[in-house]
Image 1 (spheres, rainbow, N blue to C red):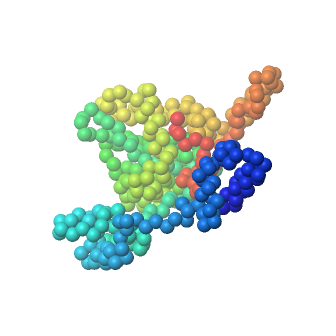
Image 2: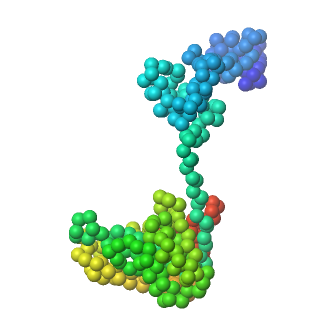
Image 3: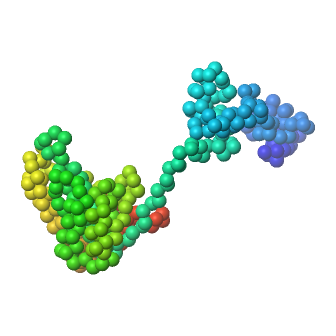
Length: 349
Protein backbone atom coordinates (compact mmCIF):
# COMPACT_ATOMS: atom_id res chain seq x y z
CA UNK A 1 0.00 0.00 0.00
CA UNK A 2 2.80 2.42 0.91
CA UNK A 3 4.52 1.61 -2.39
CA UNK A 4 1.35 2.47 -4.32
CA UNK A 5 1.05 5.76 -2.47
CA UNK A 6 4.59 6.71 -3.43
CA UNK A 7 3.93 5.90 -7.09
CA UNK A 8 0.81 8.09 -7.07
CA UNK A 9 2.67 10.96 -5.39
CA UNK A 10 5.48 10.75 -7.95
CA UNK A 11 3.02 10.63 -10.85
CA UNK A 12 1.15 13.73 -9.63
CA UNK A 13 4.40 15.55 -8.91
CA UNK A 14 5.72 14.74 -12.40
CA UNK A 15 2.49 15.96 -13.99
CA UNK A 16 2.58 19.22 -12.02
CA UNK A 17 6.19 19.87 -13.09
CA UNK A 18 5.03 19.60 -16.70
CA UNK A 19 2.37 22.25 -16.12
CA UNK A 20 -0.67 20.24 -15.02
CA UNK A 21 -2.90 21.47 -12.21
CA UNK A 22 -2.92 19.37 -9.04
CA UNK A 23 -6.72 19.13 -8.97
CA UNK A 24 -6.84 17.89 -12.58
CA UNK A 25 -4.04 15.35 -11.99
CA UNK A 26 -5.85 14.03 -8.90
CA UNK A 27 -9.10 13.76 -10.86
CA UNK A 28 -7.39 11.68 -13.57
CA UNK A 29 -5.79 9.34 -11.04
CA UNK A 30 -8.92 9.05 -8.90
CA UNK A 31 -7.87 10.53 -5.57
CA UNK A 32 -8.88 13.79 -3.93
CA UNK A 33 -6.52 16.69 -3.38
CA UNK A 34 -7.00 16.43 0.38
CA UNK A 35 -6.01 12.77 0.31
CA UNK A 36 -2.89 13.66 -1.66
CA UNK A 37 -1.97 16.34 0.88
CA UNK A 38 -2.43 13.87 3.74
CA UNK A 39 -0.23 11.32 2.01
CA UNK A 40 2.47 13.93 1.51
CA UNK A 41 3.07 14.33 5.23
CA UNK A 42 6.27 12.63 6.38
CA UNK A 43 4.59 10.76 9.27
CA UNK A 44 1.64 9.51 7.22
CA UNK A 45 3.16 7.06 4.73
CA UNK A 46 0.98 4.16 6.00
CA UNK A 47 -2.80 3.74 6.14
CA UNK A 48 -3.55 4.22 9.81
CA UNK A 49 -6.84 2.35 9.52
CA UNK A 50 -4.97 -0.88 8.79
CA UNK A 51 -2.61 -0.66 11.75
CA UNK A 52 -4.97 0.90 14.27
CA UNK A 53 -5.39 -0.99 17.53
CA UNK A 54 -8.77 -0.37 19.10
CA UNK A 55 -9.91 -1.65 22.46
CA UNK A 56 -13.69 -1.86 23.00
CA UNK A 57 -14.84 0.39 25.81
CA UNK A 58 -16.90 -2.45 27.28
CA UNK A 59 -14.12 -5.06 27.17
CA UNK A 60 -13.93 -7.21 30.29
CA UNK A 61 -10.81 -6.90 32.37
CA UNK A 62 -8.52 -9.86 32.92
CA UNK A 63 -9.72 -10.05 36.53
CA UNK A 64 -13.36 -10.25 35.38
CA UNK A 65 -12.51 -12.99 32.87
CA UNK A 66 -10.75 -15.02 35.54
CA UNK A 67 -13.75 -14.65 37.82
CA UNK A 68 -16.04 -16.03 35.08
CA UNK A 69 -13.70 -18.98 34.50
CA UNK A 70 -13.47 -19.72 38.24
CA UNK A 71 -17.23 -19.51 38.73
CA UNK A 72 -18.01 -21.65 35.65
CA UNK A 73 -15.75 -24.41 37.00
CA UNK A 74 -17.07 -24.28 40.53
CA UNK A 75 -18.96 -27.38 41.79
CA UNK A 76 -22.29 -25.54 41.57
CA UNK A 77 -21.93 -24.54 37.89
CA UNK A 78 -19.38 -26.93 36.36
CA UNK A 79 -22.10 -29.15 34.91
CA UNK A 80 -24.04 -26.27 33.34
CA UNK A 81 -23.64 -24.38 30.05
CA UNK A 82 -23.60 -20.56 30.01
CA UNK A 83 -27.27 -20.34 28.98
CA UNK A 84 -28.08 -22.01 32.33
CA UNK A 85 -25.46 -20.21 34.42
CA UNK A 86 -26.43 -16.64 33.49
CA UNK A 87 -30.13 -16.95 34.50
CA UNK A 88 -29.23 -18.70 37.76
CA UNK A 89 -26.86 -15.85 38.63
CA UNK A 90 -29.54 -13.29 37.74
CA UNK A 91 -31.98 -15.04 40.11
CA UNK A 92 -29.41 -14.46 42.87
CA UNK A 93 -29.07 -10.78 41.92
CA UNK A 94 -25.63 -11.29 40.35
CA UNK A 95 -24.54 -10.06 36.91
CA UNK A 96 -21.01 -10.79 35.71
CA UNK A 97 -21.35 -10.66 31.93
CA UNK A 98 -23.70 -11.53 29.10
CA UNK A 99 -24.33 -15.09 27.99
CA UNK A 100 -22.34 -14.50 24.77
CA UNK A 101 -19.41 -13.21 26.83
CA UNK A 102 -19.49 -16.35 28.95
CA UNK A 103 -19.40 -18.48 25.80
CA UNK A 104 -16.59 -16.41 24.27
CA UNK A 105 -14.41 -16.55 27.37
CA UNK A 106 -14.95 -20.26 27.93
CA UNK A 107 -14.18 -20.96 24.28
CA UNK A 108 -10.96 -18.92 24.47
CA UNK A 109 -9.87 -21.09 27.41
CA UNK A 110 -10.99 -24.35 25.76
CA UNK A 111 -13.75 -24.80 28.31
CA UNK A 112 -16.67 -25.47 25.96
CA UNK A 113 -16.06 -29.22 25.76
CA UNK A 114 -18.35 -31.65 27.59
CA UNK A 115 -18.48 -30.22 31.12
CA UNK A 116 -21.21 -32.32 32.68
CA UNK A 117 -20.59 -35.13 35.13
CA UNK A 118 -22.70 -37.46 32.96
CA UNK A 119 -21.06 -39.62 30.33
CA UNK A 120 -20.51 -37.72 27.04
CA UNK A 121 -22.32 -38.80 23.89
CA UNK A 122 -20.84 -41.82 22.17
CA UNK A 123 -19.74 -40.85 18.65
CA UNK A 124 -21.09 -43.14 15.94
CA UNK A 125 -18.79 -44.19 13.15
CA UNK A 126 -20.00 -44.35 9.58
CA UNK A 127 -20.85 -47.92 8.49
CA UNK A 128 -18.17 -49.85 6.67
CA UNK A 129 -18.08 -49.01 2.96
CA UNK A 130 -19.35 -51.90 0.84
CA UNK A 131 -19.10 -52.53 -2.91
CA UNK A 132 -21.19 -54.97 -4.94
CA UNK A 133 -19.82 -56.21 -8.26
CA UNK A 134 -22.48 -58.84 -8.87
CA UNK A 135 -25.83 -60.12 -7.60
CA UNK A 136 -26.24 -61.80 -4.20
CA UNK A 137 -23.37 -59.92 -2.60
CA UNK A 138 -25.07 -57.08 -0.66
CA UNK A 139 -28.70 -57.04 0.43
CA UNK A 140 -30.50 -54.09 1.98
CA UNK A 141 -33.65 -54.63 4.01
CA UNK A 142 -36.14 -52.70 6.09
CA UNK A 143 -39.71 -52.71 7.36
CA UNK A 144 -42.34 -50.14 6.41
CA UNK A 145 -45.86 -49.50 7.67
CA UNK A 146 -48.93 -50.27 5.56
CA UNK A 147 -52.09 -48.56 6.89
CA UNK A 148 -55.27 -50.48 7.57
CA UNK A 149 -58.83 -49.23 7.86
CA UNK A 150 -58.68 -49.63 11.61
CA UNK A 151 -57.39 -46.36 13.07
CA UNK A 152 -54.02 -46.87 14.76
CA UNK A 153 -53.57 -50.39 13.38
CA UNK A 154 -50.88 -51.15 10.79
CA UNK A 155 -49.48 -53.99 8.76
CA UNK A 156 -45.73 -54.40 8.29
CA UNK A 157 -44.00 -55.00 4.97
CA UNK A 158 -40.66 -56.83 5.30
CA UNK A 159 -38.70 -56.25 2.10
CA UNK A 160 -35.19 -57.36 1.05
CA UNK A 161 -33.43 -55.78 -1.95
CA UNK A 162 -30.26 -56.80 -3.80
CA UNK A 163 -28.50 -53.44 -4.26
CA UNK A 164 -26.49 -54.59 -7.30
CA UNK A 165 -29.42 -55.78 -9.41
CA UNK A 166 -32.11 -53.81 -7.53
CA UNK A 167 -34.18 -56.99 -7.50
CA UNK A 168 -36.56 -57.56 -4.62
CA UNK A 169 -35.30 -60.98 -3.55
CA UNK A 170 -37.82 -61.47 -0.76
CA UNK A 171 -40.79 -59.91 0.98
CA UNK A 172 -43.57 -60.66 3.45
CA UNK A 173 -46.49 -58.76 4.99
CA UNK A 174 -47.26 -59.44 8.66
CA UNK A 175 -49.40 -57.85 11.34
CA UNK A 176 -46.48 -57.44 13.75
CA UNK A 177 -42.76 -56.64 13.88
CA UNK A 178 -40.72 -59.56 15.15
CA UNK A 179 -37.17 -60.70 14.70
CA UNK A 180 -38.35 -64.29 14.21
CA UNK A 181 -40.45 -63.32 11.18
CA UNK A 182 -37.45 -61.61 9.58
CA UNK A 183 -35.38 -64.73 10.29
CA UNK A 184 -37.94 -66.91 8.48
CA UNK A 185 -37.80 -64.58 5.48
CA UNK A 186 -34.00 -64.80 5.31
CA UNK A 187 -34.09 -68.61 5.51
CA UNK A 188 -36.49 -68.63 2.56
CA UNK A 189 -34.33 -66.20 0.52
CA UNK A 190 -31.16 -68.16 1.27
CA UNK A 191 -32.75 -71.35 -0.06
CA UNK A 192 -34.23 -69.77 -3.21
CA UNK A 193 -31.06 -67.86 -4.10
CA UNK A 194 -28.83 -70.81 -3.17
CA UNK A 195 -26.61 -68.60 -1.02
CA UNK A 196 -23.25 -69.85 0.19
CA UNK A 197 -21.75 -69.03 3.60
CA UNK A 198 -19.96 -65.66 3.73
CA UNK A 199 -21.43 -64.72 0.33
CA UNK A 200 -23.92 -62.02 1.34
CA UNK A 201 -23.81 -58.98 3.60
CA UNK A 202 -27.23 -57.92 4.90
CA UNK A 203 -27.49 -54.19 5.66
CA UNK A 204 -30.28 -52.64 7.72
CA UNK A 205 -31.04 -49.88 10.19
CA UNK A 206 -30.96 -50.28 13.98
CA UNK A 207 -34.58 -51.30 14.59
CA UNK A 208 -35.29 -53.93 17.21
CA UNK A 209 -36.34 -56.61 14.65
CA UNK A 210 -33.05 -56.00 12.78
CA UNK A 211 -30.92 -56.52 15.89
CA UNK A 212 -33.09 -59.19 17.53
CA UNK A 213 -31.35 -62.26 18.86
CA UNK A 214 -33.40 -64.65 16.71
CA UNK A 215 -32.48 -62.95 13.45
CA UNK A 216 -28.80 -62.54 14.35
CA UNK A 217 -28.55 -66.20 15.33
CA UNK A 218 -30.21 -67.22 12.05
CA UNK A 219 -27.85 -65.04 10.03
CA UNK A 220 -24.91 -66.66 11.77
CA UNK A 221 -26.21 -70.13 10.90
CA UNK A 222 -26.75 -69.11 7.26
CA UNK A 223 -23.33 -67.46 7.01
CA UNK A 224 -24.85 -64.04 6.22
CA UNK A 225 -22.90 -61.09 7.59
CA UNK A 226 -24.99 -58.29 9.21
CA UNK A 227 -24.28 -54.58 8.69
CA UNK A 228 -26.05 -51.71 10.43
CA UNK A 229 -26.71 -48.02 9.86
CA UNK A 230 -25.98 -45.38 12.45
CA UNK A 231 -28.94 -44.62 14.72
CA UNK A 232 -31.41 -42.15 13.13
CA UNK A 233 -29.34 -41.78 9.93
CA UNK A 234 -31.56 -42.86 7.02
CA UNK A 235 -28.83 -42.00 4.48
CA UNK A 236 -26.91 -45.07 5.66
CA UNK A 237 -29.62 -47.29 4.15
CA UNK A 238 -30.62 -45.34 1.01
CA UNK A 239 -31.66 -48.21 -1.25
CA UNK A 240 -34.46 -49.46 0.99
CA UNK A 241 -35.63 -45.90 1.69
CA UNK A 242 -35.81 -45.17 -2.05
CA UNK A 243 -37.64 -48.40 -2.78
CA UNK A 244 -40.29 -47.67 -0.16
CA UNK A 245 -40.83 -44.23 -1.68
CA UNK A 246 -41.30 -45.79 -5.13
CA UNK A 247 -43.75 -48.31 -3.68
CA UNK A 248 -45.91 -45.72 -1.94
CA UNK A 249 -45.90 -43.25 -4.85
CA UNK A 250 -47.03 -45.76 -7.47
CA UNK A 251 -50.27 -44.65 -9.20
CA UNK A 252 -51.75 -48.04 -8.27
CA UNK A 253 -51.04 -47.57 -4.56
CA UNK A 254 -54.47 -47.73 -2.85
CA UNK A 255 -55.98 -44.35 -2.04
CA UNK A 256 -57.72 -45.94 0.91
CA UNK A 257 -56.06 -48.07 3.57
CA UNK A 258 -55.85 -51.83 3.09
CA UNK A 259 -58.95 -53.80 4.06
CA UNK A 260 -56.99 -56.70 5.54
CA UNK A 261 -53.67 -58.54 5.37
CA UNK A 262 -54.81 -60.58 2.37
CA UNK A 263 -55.48 -57.50 0.24
CA UNK A 264 -52.13 -56.00 1.30
CA UNK A 265 -50.26 -59.15 0.27
CA UNK A 266 -52.04 -59.23 -3.09
CA UNK A 267 -51.14 -55.63 -3.84
CA UNK A 268 -47.48 -56.04 -2.79
CA UNK A 269 -47.22 -59.20 -4.89
CA UNK A 270 -48.35 -57.25 -7.96
CA UNK A 271 -45.93 -54.44 -7.21
CA UNK A 272 -42.98 -56.81 -6.83
CA UNK A 273 -43.87 -58.50 -10.14
CA UNK A 274 -43.95 -55.13 -11.92
CA UNK A 275 -40.80 -53.85 -10.20
CA UNK A 276 -38.67 -56.92 -10.88
CA UNK A 277 -39.91 -57.97 -14.31
CA UNK A 278 -41.20 -54.86 -16.10
CA UNK A 279 -39.68 -51.75 -14.51
CA UNK A 280 -36.58 -50.43 -16.29
CA UNK A 281 -34.54 -48.98 -13.44
CA UNK A 282 -32.69 -45.72 -14.00
CA UNK A 283 -29.93 -46.68 -11.54
CA UNK A 284 -28.88 -49.69 -13.65
CA UNK A 285 -29.18 -47.96 -17.04
CA UNK A 286 -32.79 -48.89 -17.69
CA UNK A 287 -32.75 -52.66 -17.63
CA UNK A 288 -35.13 -54.55 -15.36
CA UNK A 289 -33.85 -55.81 -11.98
CA UNK A 290 -34.66 -59.40 -13.02
CA UNK A 291 -32.57 -59.06 -16.21
CA UNK A 292 -29.61 -57.69 -14.30
CA UNK A 293 -29.97 -60.32 -11.58
CA UNK A 294 -29.72 -63.02 -14.26
CA UNK A 295 -26.70 -61.34 -15.91
CA UNK A 296 -28.58 -60.38 -19.09
CA UNK A 297 -28.00 -56.64 -18.80
CA UNK A 298 -24.63 -56.58 -20.56
CA UNK A 299 -26.07 -58.20 -23.71
CA UNK A 300 -29.07 -55.86 -23.68
CA UNK A 301 -26.93 -52.74 -23.24
CA UNK A 302 -24.51 -53.86 -25.97
CA UNK A 303 -27.45 -54.28 -28.34
CA UNK A 304 -28.73 -50.79 -27.51
CA UNK A 305 -25.29 -49.34 -28.19
CA UNK A 306 -25.21 -51.08 -31.60
CA UNK A 307 -28.65 -49.67 -32.45
CA UNK A 308 -27.50 -46.14 -31.62
CA UNK A 309 -24.24 -46.48 -33.55
CA UNK A 310 -26.11 -47.74 -36.62
CA UNK A 311 -28.60 -44.89 -36.34
CA UNK A 312 -25.76 -42.37 -36.13
CA UNK A 313 -24.07 -43.90 -39.16
CA UNK A 314 -27.27 -43.53 -41.19
CA UNK A 315 -27.91 -39.95 -40.13
CA UNK A 316 -24.80 -38.46 -38.43
CA UNK A 317 -26.12 -34.88 -38.53
CA UNK A 318 -28.62 -35.72 -35.78
CA UNK A 319 -25.79 -36.18 -33.28
CA UNK A 320 -23.68 -33.24 -32.19
CA UNK A 321 -21.33 -35.48 -30.20
CA UNK A 322 -21.17 -38.97 -28.76
CA UNK A 323 -24.14 -41.29 -28.61
CA UNK A 324 -25.92 -41.92 -25.32
CA UNK A 325 -23.94 -44.10 -22.94
CA UNK A 326 -25.31 -47.63 -22.66
CA UNK A 327 -22.42 -48.93 -20.59
CA UNK A 328 -22.95 -51.54 -17.90
CA UNK A 329 -22.96 -50.30 -14.28
CA UNK A 330 -20.14 -52.48 -13.00
CA UNK A 331 -20.05 -51.46 -9.34
CA UNK A 332 -22.66 -50.34 -6.83
CA UNK A 333 -21.53 -48.69 -3.60
CA UNK A 334 -23.16 -48.66 -0.18
CA UNK A 335 -21.95 -45.89 2.14
CA UNK A 336 -18.83 -45.20 0.04
CA UNK A 337 -15.86 -43.37 1.47
CA UNK A 338 -15.23 -39.80 0.40
CA UNK A 339 -13.82 -39.65 -3.10
CA UNK A 340 -15.50 -42.90 -4.15
CA UNK A 341 -18.04 -42.74 -6.95
CA UNK A 342 -21.63 -43.40 -6.02
CA UNK A 343 -23.67 -45.79 -8.12
CA UNK A 344 -25.22 -44.06 -11.11
CA UNK A 345 -28.55 -43.48 -9.44
CA UNK A 346 -29.69 -44.67 -6.02
CA UNK A 347 -33.28 -43.63 -6.74
CA UNK A 348 -35.55 -46.63 -6.93
CA UNK A 349 -37.52 -44.95 -9.69
